Image (cartoon, rainbow, N blue to C red; front, side, top):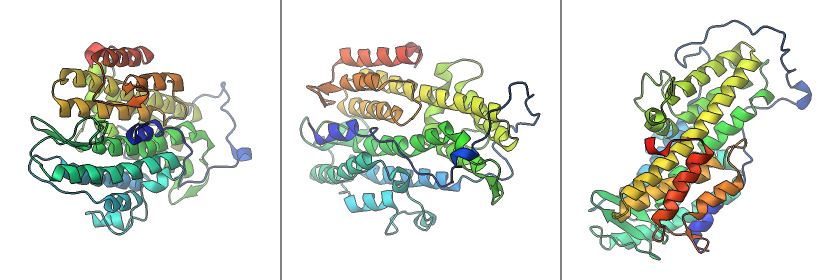
Length: 383
């Protein structure tokens, strides 16, 4: 089995996570709300501007991810021929040796790796990805103005203005790292927080917030949107950007953007007002909507790959994104998609059990689109 395939297949196998806030002991869990008790009355703000909000650590991790992908992308040029430094990439993931250009990240005392500290298989795969990327960039440096990669050989692919660095199976290194961290850290942390929100203390106040308020803020920060989203879409990061990109296509009233943001606001207000039923309803909306966004973006990237089937770099880029989204779905502990269906979707990109983007067939891409659309009740023609 190729190393690249092993890395992709192992991304979602372990999902135990660590949190900065302490959970309550089981005997301290809140008593379920009495159905006969009327819901408390309170105002839900129009923006995520609660008086005691702080999700700095989440936004700092988003910034760390951005610097990692920006560094890998330095190889995505028809003229530049940099050779990547694997240790620099590993240091950035672990936040050691002051590798970030933003000095505040170097001294933040946090890292991406610590939030995937139990994702042993992913961390090992990412480490291998960083090492392989150095080899590929070395191969590409010999002739930066031409495609050097082909089936079985890592290097650079060029199609028009698209320049990407890929492994021996044609998988883009930048997308492996970006989608892998988006899933194993950002999505995984947010989903696990949301699905276990009731287990956090919502009585004791420390530094102006209860533990439940604190972790809800942390989860919101991982979504990567401004406090006045979707009215304001400036500066969207990672998941927020992907949500915005499919919101109109998915249609509906309210839009996906508004649905998920309203739920973030409602849930936070509900927590502060001890409205457990309102909190849980908001949590369920966010989890289901976010999962649908992942599925929709997968479909749109596979469709884009079909459109660019004759342009190898664009084709491989889009399929690298799509495979990343399949793996990201695994990181929701309450996922609605089965492991069997995830394995089936992955198989559409394999030849003899091994992922290889050079040998993917259009028929299998159609199968992947149709399967994902069926599973999430999506109209693929709109994406």
